[in-house]
Length: 94
Image (cartoon, rainbow, N blue to C red; front, side, top):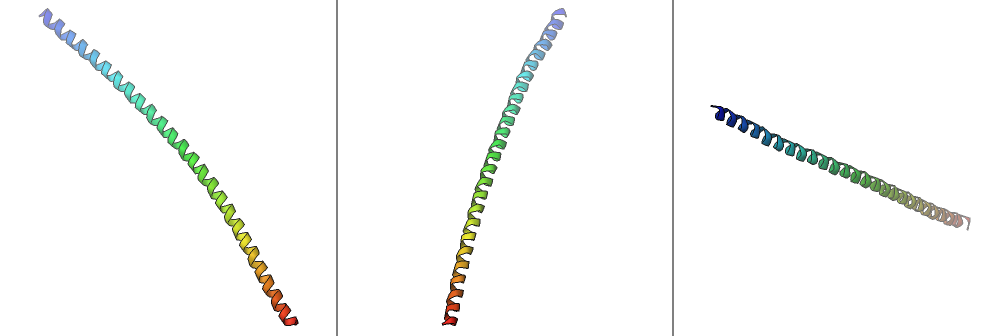
């Protein structure tokens, strides 16, 4: 009877020992997975911020070029209109 109780007690102790080791390993791997995921998410956010900044800079450059082109086109249109008006005035005067 004494051997049976001691054997059962030894089995219970061993089973708790193996279970607690497994749980800590699982907890460590879960913790590492969470840290890795957080690192990857942080990197993804940084990359997104960088890409957004570059896109804004490119958009600003493109907008500036479009404004310059529009100003040049407007100036050319005014010059052309002015030349046409001068020609018409010269026709009327002669």
